Image (cartoon, rainbow, N blue to C red; front, top):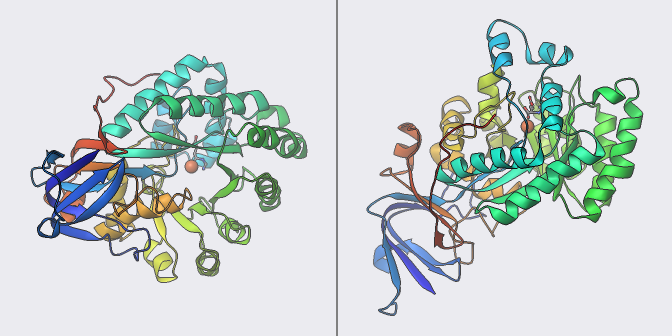
Length: 414
Ligand code: NIG
Ligand code: FE
């Protein structure tokens, strides 16, 4: 079945192989969809001859971009941490709060206590809101269970949400997120549990596509991260790494050494590590909302791109360091504070985010043969969309060629 989107004011095709600063913009464009994929995209006056009976859709001069990809979130969790927001504003640091049993471990307590149906409902609400913003694929990490049963439960919830929701949910196992209190005196036993029990079970049941680890003072050491990720690699999982978020701990170099698809955060990564990432083809995932909320430095995106590293942009949505899933806001912040151009930022949440999920050329681009996931935005062009920040500029979303009903959640769930 053919569907023609016409009267597109500006189309961003975001070809997978383009340099980051070229989002493949076409003014006065049209786009043809066949069997859920892009069959043709380009200037309206070059549209090939078509049969007379095809379905047409008038975009009314709007901006059309690939469905946005949020390639780094901690989607499923119990409770919130508004109290810590107030403590940080009063001067406490993220690490001080964590050292006193708050932070990630506070969310672990809440998550463990919350019924699966309630965790699921809350995450589903959030996915509804994300879809309404134009997001069509979301990577989602575990890491608030921190024992075998609870980590598997979080990943099972992601499997269910992926099956039931329009958004594709790409699961990542992050057992190495924090040391759970039961293992406070025996770090090695926890890492053993991850490598000998959790990861083999996750791989066996196909519950995750990627494995991530938080390498940082107060979380896991480089050696522990290396052991977890090497084990995951042997089990056939792709690798990601929370690296150099709060200090330069050598995480970026480790991600490159292990051939990770992405290294995330990188607020404190040094120039040598940037060369390593470029050589390894590892994507740098920038998380400007986390920089904003924690008042940490923004990632040196210009320097990374100059070194030849591709820079994705994601939300890091979680109840602590980044309690917002507003990916368009993250893009505007990436422009202002990471000095990315609107084209670079958009590529970072489409084609390059797809690369951070090993899905480039399949999603994140509106070129021939790619899945027709797209957002129709109420803006005359890309510059205007990212400059005139609005609560939501998204008018319509298509997933695999089909228009979707958008129903943002009416309220926040506890
Ligand atoms: O990416 N850095 C580690 N993990 C999250 C924060 C999780 C939390 O605070 O609950 C992050 O910022
Ligand atoms: Fe994160």
